Image (cartoon, rainbow, N blue to C red):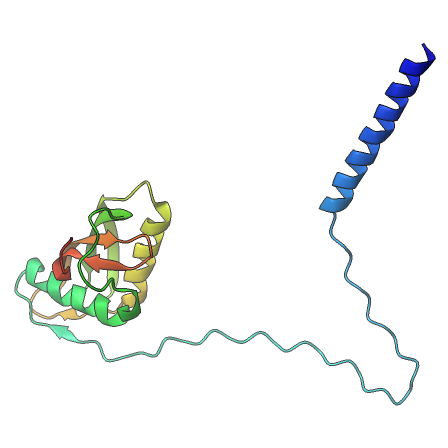
Length: 176
């Protein structure tokens, strides 16, 4: 009986050591305390720099759209989105398989402000794309003022590449 007892004791000790090692690896090391200086002529510690305040988006003159129909306004809105996101536009023909495709309806008031976003076909397999498209549209406001329409609701299809770049169906260069 003695050898089995030693085996189980050794096994328990090894298990306890393994658990202790895992717990120690999960802990966060405490931040080191600043070293106090005993020199009276030492300069006082430098306080951390204050966080930079967010930079306000410069207010630009809102352009005016003379579109007579929501379909005409859609082209003006797409060109506006492209001008605001030039670095994110997929250049050339899109590949045959896209990461996501979504159809979004956007309501714009007479001043070009986004009033409402309504998904006609959301790319539910890519919720991060839904959030990014909504963020992109809201950040692009104000849109061109729909002078002849008062307010307008237009619909466009977002063609989303896996790189995070996109094209709008209104201005797409097509697919391969």
